[in-house]
Length: 232
Image (cartoon, rainbow, N blue to C red):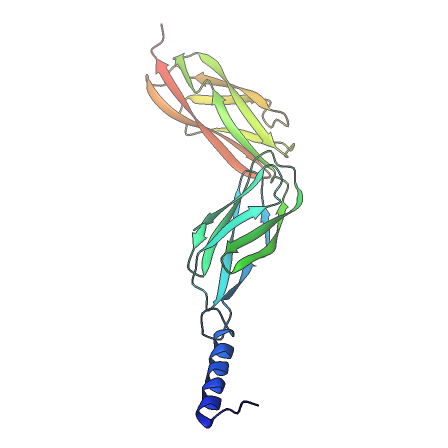
């Protein structure tokens, strides 16, 4: 039987400790490099044609490497972009865009981080809300020429979004002697005919008038350029 001397035993013990310590962790710190990924807020409500923002937070443990951020599982019409998309920091801003034609409803997006320390993922809930009732007003043609004592017409075009109520029309900023009448005056459809009448005493010149429409969503307006010429 071979006997170990005291010095030999001490050498074996030291080697054993060295091996044990060397196997405890890849970087020798005793802590495994890691990170967690969270999003806040976890739910976004976005109108079609608009965008929402959430923050991606990376909580790191002994890990300072790059994390590449991506999204997946999004339907057509919904997209996500990160700033930055590849980060060695702790936060990134995720902007979620919804195209104008996206059907209202509830959707989800997977937010994913990929790195040397592994892959982490979180779910982001997205509610595409119905468009708000609204309308736009435009005057076509937007410029008319009328002689003193005469009248002319132009069209008022109403583009509606989920709104069918009446819109009350008015002609504003007209000089004395210039009047306007609408047919109809409070349309529930997509347009009206504006007749502008210029009195005989109105001085020739160029005037900026405003056509305004007021409905439940608010007021919208457009400019009408009126040129008054001398009576023939």
